[in-house]
Image 1: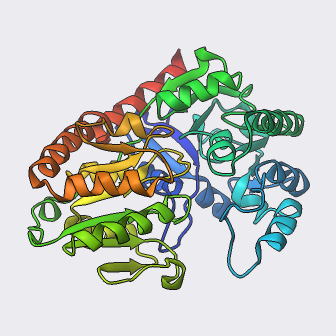
Image 2 (image 1 turned 30 degrees about the vertical axis):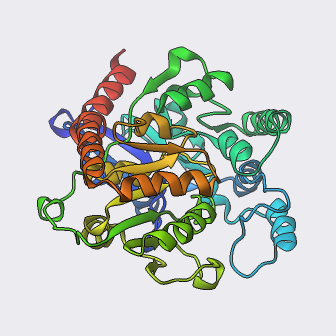
Length: 406
């Protein structure tokens, strides 16, 4: 069944936290809601909750399922929230999720005939009543095991054991999860070949997998035409979790670079305290939080080189944003980043947490405006080819039709 005018009606379950600094998952949700494919009508689940069309339910199961998604890092990993010391954070983090409904959405409805299918982006879902009869699409960038291995530092064996535990618990609770529990899903959309292989290794059937890059809006033309200051070279890091995004290597590399090149500048858009950087802040601009619209208006247009030397990365949304502005990129050689940044063509790749290698890459681009322009143009062309909205809109429309009629 389709809605008025033949539109496909989709209940979209995805994070849309209303804060100044959002993560990539929130950005994808907002882009989908703002730019649906032709012939598709989205209803965000939060609006459906407010209208009473659906309801949250099974709070105990939601709490238990949420615990599966909170495999906390071991000692020494700089992954803390607020004023809690690491030991207390780890203790409470293993006992209590931040908020059950921030990790697993457990939803119920007595009627679901207003929708044709349910699309769950980034959130695992537990479905009750009529919602279980809707065709379900699961969609994610990478997956939890990547974070456990590359950032938390879990061994391969421990990562496998944690993943196996989470799989057993989530399946027993009836939660649909793109990596651990896909039985209920008609298909699973992944954003990269890296994620494809990760899902195959986790046991997701290949016939359920669909590859679709994350699409973003093209920047306004007036922001692309901004003239940058030719007397400086500004490097920019945009990331909600500063340390996971490679912040330690960035500040160390920048301090060494600036000793030789005083024209170097660094902008950091992240919630990090100045005293935590441990370097001379001359030439450093700290922006703790900024709405995405203002980042597009005031940060990217003044940037010469985008940095994302992450320790672990779901996809690399700021890389895609930088490429849309025609910026050269320096990123880590991990996860999906080598698929986004073509080494020596649209940017440079470095090992994670390697300030010396990062400084060398930064110096190479600082000293060659020609190379910056060349890389930036190639990145912009790659964005238009793979990440522009019309490309992903067409891909989503094709997947929806396949699920409904295939």
